[in-house]
Length: 255
Length: 255
Image 1: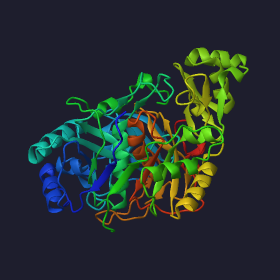
Image 2 (image 1 turned 45 degrees about the vertical axis):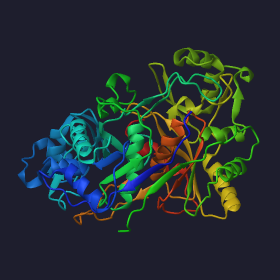
Image 3 (image 1 turned 180 degrees about the vertical axis):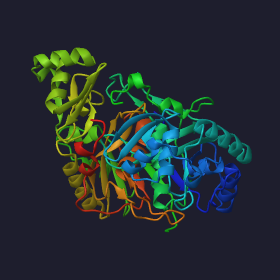
Image 4 (image 1 turned 120 degrees about the vertical axis):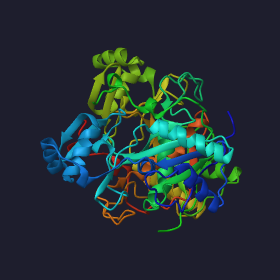
């Protein structure tokens, strides 16, 4: 057993507001530099989804949307603007639950969450929404490559969003895009303290890292979309992605 | 907005194996001292459930159990020892799903998880199981009081277990017992970056703290059941508990 070292969650304060077309890697790099934060080999850069969506232009003005009849019904039931309801439906592959004022959909990425991950907050004050990045794993890979080039360090990137969940109150941050690390640490077959072989032990470490990052992000009233997690000995991977965290319907007992 | 400070997740290595009747607070205190870890005001002590269960004697030898006919059926389907199946059923208030080799129950605490949280690993090598603590919030409160007395510092305590979840692969650590902090940070009504008022924003920070703690606990192959989280500005509470994290059935779309 390796001697465990401390893990640090380090804020990168002072990120400017991101606009469509912005180079997020360059902004993070510049901001970190100004704050005298030097990236190190093994650092995990945790980035809030809204930053990526905005930079990639995944923002829709509500006025520009032509709502369907279905959107009118949805808007009334979930108490959101009708333009937003239309975008939620467009972003959905299927509707998983639509009850008691809540719309739970499966997005085209396979993510199951409220309102297809479409969000009014931190976009422009209520007249536009951000949708999830088109391909969050690709966004994470690109951001990782650029940050590794800028820093000369071996890094991993996690793009996060805040999801509710069944059975438990409150929302937690999860990983919707991953690059550079295995999102699930499979410990099946390892022995426990007494030599008993663990039969079920697949830890969703990317989601735990996303949640750890949110502890800082959330306290800064949305003004801290990027944090660094240092000291976590993740399993490196050049091809893993957050898609591995999406449970296939045939293995799900609750859809 | 307060300037965000770094959060640290600090291991307390070297905890001895816990036996029924052991004083967990004294063991943590002694181990931390030996490792020259000084607790500070605001520290959150994250403790794996199995330690509490063992100290409280929530351990059952499989041989001592008289299995029911139902337990025989369950054991075969979930591929566990029949004695364990009997204990799982005894710990369950209701069966939420029983399909495809998986038994998801609601425990008497209201927790929804696989096998009523009954676990073979890290107990005694396969011939006994640990059940969840009878009252994890009470266990957390007691541990907090004792550690605060020993250290003279203001602390919070989270007792954690590793749960699977719908929709997403892999397990994550969640909070099953909480003392000293509000488990949910309600940010409804706060303004976002653009002055838009957040309508839905209740973050389950205790679960995020539990997940953050697991990042260290999990990597040490179960030999690290206690970690300290330092620097997280939690909302203090003398009466909050992990019960607040359990979603009442009437607010759940998936039971």
